[in-house]
Length: 309
Image (cartoon, rainbow, N blue to C red; front, side, top):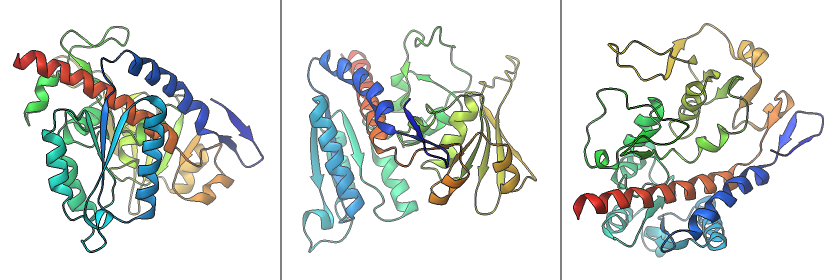
């Protein structure tokens, strides 16, 4: 992990971190029987969304991933409304057997309706890891899954068989993780004390859970409360809890949390003055996580094929 210290805190550069995953992904893709196919769905005229779609295509082209951009609504025709036709585009990509992964460029309508669209994407094609199945696994520290369980809405009634040396237990594969918070969890030591400002379901809360599940002490700061996330100690078999984070209320103030934190994660630029680590952009690493998820989804398809044959 490369860094540059310029007086205000250590500046972390995303490129070396992304390159580590890029090499792993390139090797995996070279062993695939065919290039994985990713469909991006752009339904708005938002400049950041259009730029992110262009960036996705550039990274996919460089690594040998087939990328197809499907434009709908105002992105396809200025006479159409923002977001028009996006649900149909998702369903079409779900049913297309040549498609391995789907990503949708949010925001489109707003939090509630966008959340609905995230659940429309098949978990077998959800490269962004936004489906509730993957969020459940993240929050419950379930690292592996049986792909057959993705067909149902049922949740596990007991902890899964633990892995040995990070190898999935028989009949399971590694679970997809949300691709935005997961690269951040690789940046610092898991024994750190971390303050995360913002508790959104996109980055803040998932990141707090990821770090706490790995052993960090995390303060989650939102507009109206502060919570402390710590790892739950392993329980007896009768309790059936998988070792995962628990959330505690705290009377600490933001200033208290910042004073004892090794790392501060925030979308507020001026935090750089007090942070010991500072990473201004993570887009390149996020794309690598997305493509790693794409390869995992290809593996899920093998299990589906074996099940239906």
